[in-house]
Length: 443
Ligand code: PHE
Image 1 (cartoon, rainbow, N blue to C red):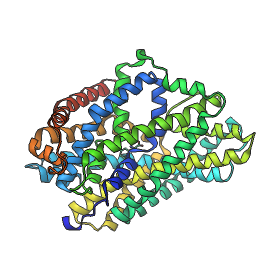
Image 2: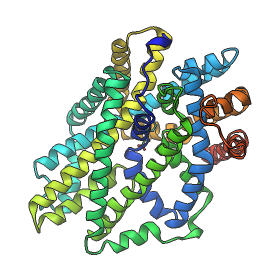
Image 3: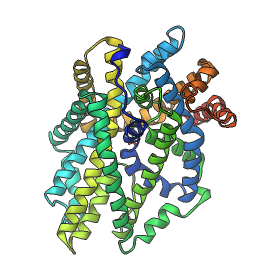
Image 4: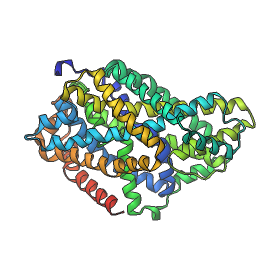
């Protein structure tokens, strides 16, 4: 089985795939809003500190477990521990990305529909009420959300069926640079609009009084969601990184790209929202109800600009959503192929059917949609992150962890750096995640 496993061609393509998983709807619809809500620059500082001190060690733990075992999530914990307790617990982390994928695919479907709308010039000169009505009409339509959810999931299935190299790696290699260019051009455009200043202030003005325990819990939750931690995607993708590559570089590279993208997305969205005189909000409403107002406003000057910008924006959302969705899909497929002996094709069909059914329900029952969202982001991801970091810090031998961290001595590490890393992994990250877990339970 192991000899059949594919590897990413290089560390750069591994970073692009990991960044593809990390950069997604979370960066565009949640991060900019959270920054504004929870204290601007003050929140950004906390977010940066959490990402480097807590999320990065967790990401590296997942990478170490994945690459050492060269297995799917369940197989990894089975191979690296005695008994079945750890691998049985890891089954939850096989399930949670599939739950996320079900509602994520519904939103992915909306973004495809909006891309079509943008091509059809639907936002040119439409008034704000009309844009809101378009969203309400679409989401309550008897079958359109289902059609687009099916289309989005089919696209994921096709990419995943093609395999790690010809599907996942190729897709990310093309779309990630493109996505970066799209979002940077959107940010430049957005910052050039009259009245953009208020959006920059919203993002950057520091207000330390807004850093409540809830804000801290949200910062860590968002950092996990954004970096795709605790659901086995990093573990599974890392199991495809060659033993010759430096996983410290891929972990740090992915974290930096994700942070950078979130900040640029903030500058692409918020200045334009303020320039159009709209109240900022979070969640799907920001992308599908609020942002399209901006395109309407622009349309009065030059309709074609409005259409082009709308097309670029929704194309960026589609790519970002797809590259994240395929990483969640792959977790389930790797499990079925390696643990249940199914072919890749059959595994893709099984995952498709399960996720499609739950997603179809989420598309029509908003309460189920938000239940799946809260269950995964507040509890299952935290549980998974704790599981992986405790496994690396307390179950695996320290020599094995550090040897994998240095790629078996190929990239010798400074003793101080490995000491700091091991301390963060063994003590700081598990304690911090437990505290946030408790805060989430209590609030
Ligand atoms: N990181 C993705 C985003 O920011 C979401 C995601 C979560 C992807 C979990 C994979 C696994 O949108």
